[in-house]
Image 1: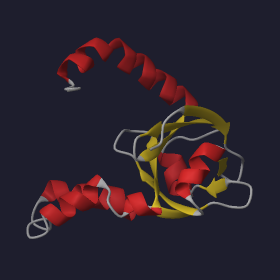
Image 2: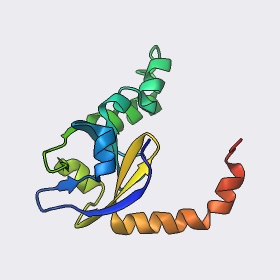
Image 3: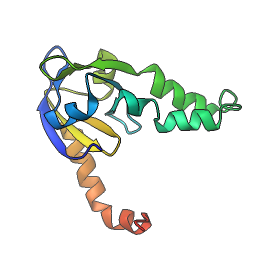
Length: 147
C-alpha cells in the first residue's frame, strides 16, 4: 500500500526520483498515466496496473464497452496516455512529454501515496487541492462510510 507525501524535484530531462519506500513496492518498472483529476498523474506498479479500476470496468462491461461513450472516453484517456516507466539505477523514472505537460510538472512535484497508486502533482496544484479538500473535509467525512 502506498502512503505518505513527498516533495521532489524533476530535472530538465523530466526525470523524477522516487522515494526509496515507493521503489520497494514498485520493483524495477511501473506504469504512468493521466490521473482522473486535472493536472495529476497516476503511477502504478505493474501488478497493480493489471487490476486497475478501469480494467474491472472493462471486464464487467466487456460486451457493451465499445457501445458506451463514457467507457470509450475513459479508456482512451487512461490507456492511450499510459507509458511504461522503468526505474533506473538511481531510482528515477523518465516522464513522457505528453504526461509532464498534462500535469504541468515543473521544478517541484509532490508524490502522494494513495492506496494502490502514487499520484504525481505539480507542487502548487497539490497545495491548492489540499487546501480545497481540507475545507470540505467535514462534509466529505460525513458522506464517507468508515464502518
